[in-house]
Image (cartoon, rainbow, N blue to C red):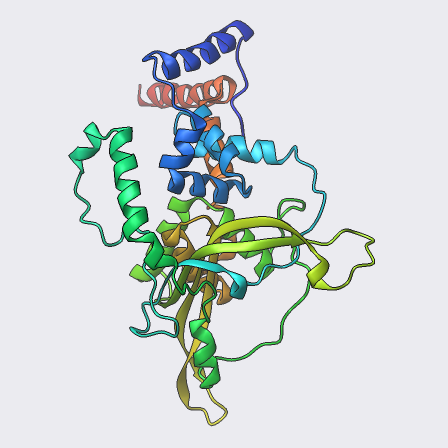
Length: 371
């Protein structure tokens, strides 16, 4: 982890901590963890993704403790994660097993299984809803009762929960290459220091743990021209993936005998990137490659930006920072970057006074020479 401000007198630090609590509770309003869970789901999803710990309840607790500060909440949750034992490794999840809640494609109007808009702010008017100021629990109960009676039965009738992948139909036409499954164990960036050049598994882990704003900013920079990637979103999926584990030293080898632990909600993106390649005949032709993004919860902007950066880093290019894996991977981590910036608040008395003395000597020497 990065720097933490821990210097200072004991009494002053204790008083500062008490002041934090005072500022949080002085208006006598209690925000429960359950309230954060039910009304701030996208914020909870973002904290879980950047902390790389899937626990909505603990993420909501971190948000409450951090008074809504994303950086502090992620720091708290990562610190807690570092204390947890790793008992098992889950079976590799298969995106085809996702129970889809939202699924769209920007590449095709009609896709097998159809577009599923789901819950999203994409189609709202982005106007402040002042009716929320007078919203009551009774209003919520009435609306939910009406919605459940009118919409939910239709939504669940003959519902398709497993949707085919758009890219598979393009592969069937020979427009995308088909690769054999790579079952090599991924490198774990939480257990070993990152070394360059990084493996793709390391890059994807760091990007999915990266700060949403940083990932989005660098993906945007590449789109604007500070890079060579301008994809078309082939498919965005939001849904739940089942998690299974096999006990170590178990005689059970059939996947059907694995233990089901539950589901995690994820956002998955596959972007189609046109690239120009030279054929054996020395002619150039356009082919498509895939940029991949995935993160906890519903965070589509981050997953799309991640797919852009994934493709950028697959093609190193010195001319563009977004294609430099060392630049990207070392600057998107919220805990490291926030910690390093925050360390500037720590005492730097000795170093600054040394610089002041140097400047004074230079100034005095210049004055004497002028006289």
